[in-house]
Image (cartoon, rainbow, N blue to C red; front, side, top):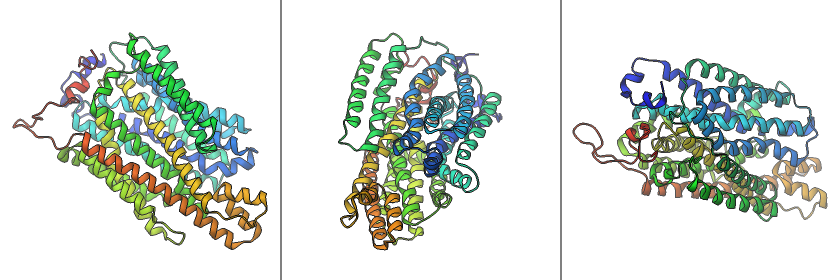
Length: 534
C-alpha cells in the first residue's frame, strides 16, 4: 500500500490499540540519540587524540568538524533519496554504515585516517535526522499524537548533546581514546535492527526523478557556508579563508534557488517558504541550535579549566540541562494546545534567554549551584520551544515530500549549530584575549597563554605563577559572559519573533474543530493533493 493510501485512512483507526507506531518511534529516537552524542563526544577526547595520534591543532579542529560539515552537506540529497527509494531502507542502511564508520574511528591509526572516518560518519548521519523526522507524519497522522511523537523524538536527539561529554568522560577514565566511538556503534546497530523490525516502509507514491543539479548546487552551497563558519572559529573573521567560502556558498545558494524555480522535479518545494509555520518553525529550531551549540562550546571549558573538573565531572554537571529538557517537553504539547504555538515558543525562548542572561553574571568564585540553576532554566526553555517549533514546521509538510522538507529544516539546524560555535567561539576568544595580560612573559609563553584558557592554565602551572592562573581564569569567565549575553539577545529576539509571527490561541467551534482555517492544518499536512504539492 502506498503512503498516499495510508494517510487517507482516519487517523484514529491507524494507531488505535497498536503499539507498533510507538515502537517505531523508539527506534527513530534511538537513531536521533546517536547523532546528538556524536556531535559532542569527540570534544572530550581531543587532548588524548593530540598525544596518541600526534595531531596538530589544525588536525584536531578538523577531527571535531568533519562530521558537522559532511552531515550538513548531505541532508538535502539524502532526504530526497528517501522520498524516492524508501525512507526505512535508507535509514536502516545509514545506521549500519554509521556503526561501521564509528568502529573505523575507534581503530584509526593517524589523524588523517580519523578525519576521513569522521567524514564517513557524517555521510551516514546526513540521512538519520531528516529521514527519522520525516517518518513521523506517516506514523502519527493524528495531530495530537504527532505532536507527542515530535516531543519524544526531539528530546532524544537534543538529550544526546549533554550526554556526549558524560559518556566520553566515563570511557576515557577507564579505556583508550577510541572507546568513545564504540557506544555509538552499538546504538547504531541496535537502531538499525529496531528500524528493520518496527518501522514501516514509507516513500512518495508519486516519486520524482532525482534533481542532480539541485543536489550538487545545494551541497556545494552548504559546504561553503558551513566550512566558512568553521574556519571563522579557527582563524577569526578577518581571514580570507573565512569569507571566501561563505560568499561562494551564498552565490551558489542563489544559483540553487534560481535552478529550483525552473526545475521540473525540484529538490525542495520553494512553496514551503510561503508557509509561515514552516518558515518560522524552522527559524526558531535553528535559533535553538545556535544557543545550545554555543553553550556546549563554552561551558564545558569553564568547568574543566576554571573549576578544574574532570571530563566525566563536566558531563555530569550538564545533567540539569537534560532535566530541564525533560520537564519542558512534558508540558510543551499541552501548553501549545491551550495557548497556541507562538505563545509556547515565545515563553520557552524567554525562559532560555533569562537563563543565559543569568549565566552571564558568572564570576570566578561562583558556585556550581548557580550554574546548575541557569543551565536547567535554559533546558526548560529549550524543552518548551524546540519541539513546538519543529512540530509547527512538520505540520506544513505533506506526507509525499516529508523527507525533502525535513531535510531542508535539518540542514538549516545544522548550519545554525555551526554558526553558533563559530560566532560565539569568536566572541569568547576575543573576550578572553582582551583580558589576558601577558606582558611580563617571554613571547612564546605569552602567545601560548593567549591561545586558549587550557594553554594559559598550563603556562601558569609551568611557571608556578598563581597570579597568572587567576588572570587567565578571570579572562575566560569574562569572555564566556560576553558569549552568554550574545546568546541571550539572539534568543530574546527569537521570542519576540515567535510572539509576532506564529499562531496564538486557536478559537474552536462547537464541534471542537478549529473555527478558522489554518494553512498548516493536519488535513493539508497529510494530503498529497494539497496546493503545496500541486
